Image (tube, rainbow, N blue to C red; front, side, top):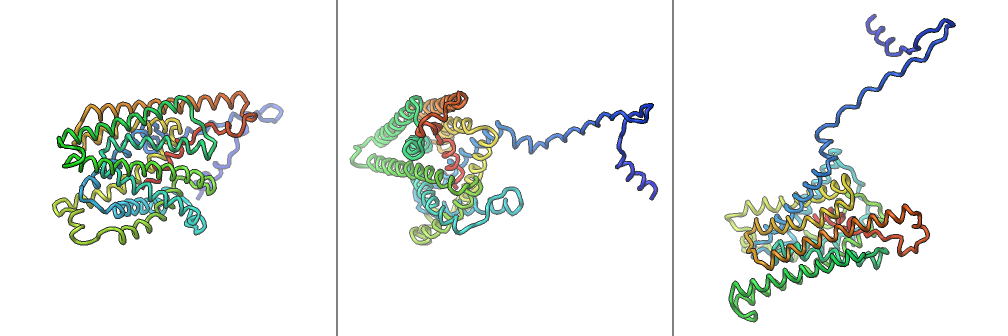
Length: 402
């Protein structure tokens, strides 16, 4: 008991310093605060920019290749079911993470859901056309054509958000168009040379028809993606949604529609299921379906992580330059034929990404220079918003691409 009282008294001792002859005390030097504990290895990793960039690149490659593995089966005709599985996995993951306290987002609100429902419809259009385009096109060609979405988003911002397009960005857009034309030409030439027939008859005609269907779906996907990104950007300003709020509502509102479309628009006969999931590889396809949902969740988290620990400009550069490893992974994992035209298209597409990234850096430096000179307040309103929101818009698009 005595030792307990002694320790209690010691906790309340006040150091008065040295006593002077007059009875006063000299103020004692304050005790130095103990050093903060070193951050854990997990916390340090969460703040590591290089780790976030590597994780983002790996996640985007996994997502693209996993989706291609599913739709690469020529008999596959259940895209709504595939998207339903992906959405279910992502929704289960975010709700579980919230229940365990790892993340937080707002609870369901009917009014907010009603406002967000048009965005969910645009999301369904984007992911459905993406799956259809990937079914008909190779991964490198799909990746190259996906760059055209950036052009539509940029000019959509000019029309609706007061954005601007610099001459360097415009040059990168021209390179993106050229790379797409080269990729289409290389695919058509390869189809003609492989089957050695007339483009209007035989197997060559069938191959070219398949490619044309892929290009058409890719065109739809570019417009759907741009509409989704621009619409969501405007809606986020009204609702102040965070990344996880966006993920939650996108997946929650999309899932019922995808399930209804799958049940009523797709063939669920035993014969068709056997074609889509062959008996010899049914387990692999089931695992791959779950894996695509996991990969969509990973890319959502990776996008938010990369922007948080780096910057939107860095994220823009990584997203633009990441097209090269995605295209190369498609050539490796799916044993696609490497032609000179395809390699040239990949190279031009990569250069367009480099030029676009440089254009974003220069534009940001220019905008910061205008602000530092204090002349932003006298500029017209159409010039005040010169910073394009393509970076943030593309991040939102990836975060929601479940």
